[in-house]
Image (cartoon, rainbow, N blue to C red):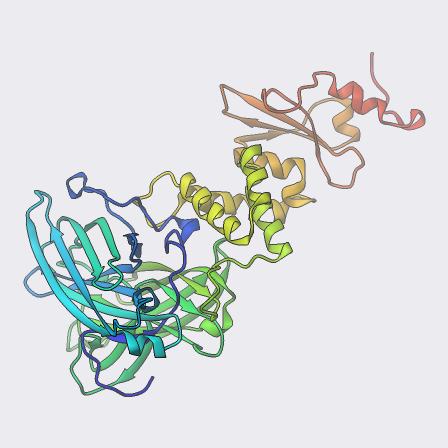
Length: 480
């Protein structure tokens, strides 16, 4: 990044507006419905995407402030290509930005209104995908809050609106970590600027989207450590480690920093995300700090995505034939027949939008940072692949994915069970439900032969059928 004096806003490399961001971090359901009332004390997970005809992304990061207050930073980024007018006579535009934060009683606690002049000629000279990025800071008391951001453009007459409930965190006591501040670029500076922290110019990524390719080898995460037990006359240490994992929970990157000496109760750190080593997709970043003196640990997580460096590529998810089959396999036991048919008939962008909405609809608690349903679903898929021959395509895999682990597994006490492997899985479904599996050919592949579930095969004579499958000379001896 060239050294330059940055104003409160600047042109920074980014992307064309891609479909709703979280509707981007979709599998974990980062995006919650707009219009949350602060009085309900429901919180949204950030980043969030605007509604309306002008698209922008917004993030909220919180830090400890003096006197029991919390510093709330509201960041937003807006793709500048939306502002280019079809009428050549318009060489500038004015962005009108309103940021308002209200408390539980709907009273306004903080508000900012600004007008930003942007040269459209300059925008036209730039490649599509450049973003306008800005940051606003407020000191607030811990409580349930409501954030509203509106941005309008004087030339295109477009307007975007974002509403989200959030809770101002309390940093006043005990060891804690600030929110994670995702950064696309960083450099030392002596200049003062809204994007400078601790002598470092940090270019934020409000959308949590990083692009792949040679343009960006690394992303960065800034965070602050608060209220760590510290005594100046004693030598003590802490350690940090961070992990980057995919949607299935597989660790892609892990790095540890051991035996870091304590120099104060509060400090700040920056971790590096190796963007060039990650494929296009969605990831979870988790940092964990352990106080080695007191042996207590705390963690903080954030989700981010890697997208193609092509500004014309609106796809977050790869859509090769193999990818599409994989996505279908992931939903085939939990989607309706109509949903599966629709998915297969859509084009790649339609398939991606379908998946975003499908997994969002499955989230049991949108106020939490994770889609608990999907976490469990992918855990089941991973378990099936590791434990059942045939993986998710086996009968055992299908039942395990649909219903989870049985509370009891028994063997059938019969001549069939002694000659061929058989298992009965028992669930607490509609009272007690059983699924009977038999290894018909002795190769470890168990087939469902009977069940008390109304949605599965029911064959009370399964033992006779299995017996008939034996060659006459090899049938087990049955006591009368």
